[in-house]
Length: 141
Figure (tube, one colour):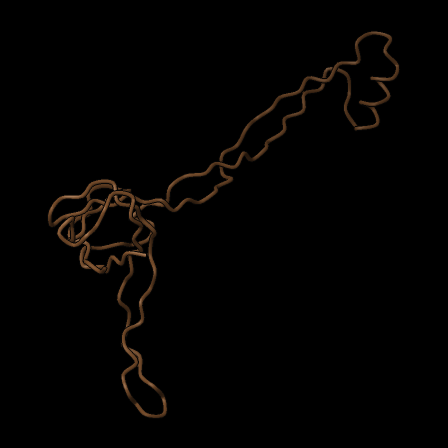
């Protein structure tokens, strides 16, 4: 089953020109492709067809007679979110062990250490990120 992208609805959703009349059902999975250049056999010069560049895996969430709405299901894990932790180091009076531990770390009494950590976050890949356009191929997989 193959159709074409007919409308970009938003960053995560698009519409294709196939529907229930074409046996598409809710939760079917599609791959969106961009048609690339035509490739030729170097020896025979025969056309081998057009290169298909996979763009984004999407799932059907709404089916009409001749139109289907798909939403992105591909995810990416990012680590650009930062968590800031501030730790106050105090010797606490006569606690020699703590004082030695902090001196060993190069920290003085009442010194503040700030640690920046990355926390992974999973998010959906958007249509814009994959440069999907009206006219791209949508193939049921």
